[in-house]
Image 1 (tube, helix red, strand yellow):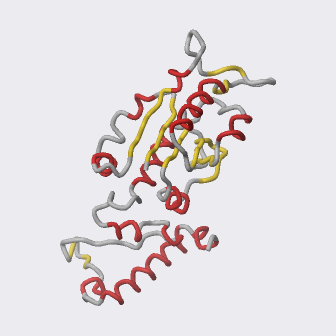
Image 2: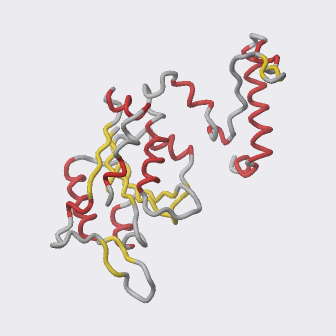
Image 3: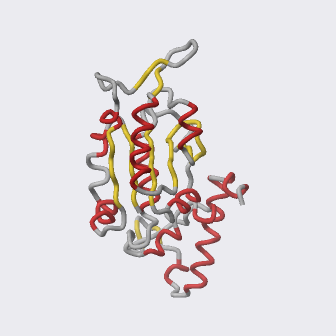
Length: 226
């Protein structure tokens, strides 16, 4: 997989993709992450990347020219399966979308800023518009990191145990069940006896029941999506 991230602040990506599983995924050639500075493509002599919006009201809009030129350059070099815009008014990003994106080959993510981008750009280039929550960030950089991280960990070979992702929260619209580790007794509380039984089938049934109960209690909205 190749992920091209278009940003006004490339320095924000120094670090997040250079540690842990994401770093190993790049070292194993399972994913390529390329960060592009939108300012480098501005034809304005001062490298401006924002302009006033038509109509009254405060707030600037990202300029069309540098974004369009950068996207056209990338598209001339390879095919992209999805071109994504991070925006508060986009579709809420979730595990189902992450699963789907993990099967793609090449993805572009534009990090939104200011009041966003011209509607004509949205309609011409973008195949997906994603939000990571009902709140507004100073920019789409953090959102692009979240989306990338959630997608990359699903690529075969990234996790040491590929079956681990199957039991994550939000797979099958359920929260994950409680987990336990050593010692067997901590602060007077024992690990549930079923987990020590050695009966794999019974343990899986217990985990499902626990996940279902937890979801009903904490996120009943997930069950309505089934």
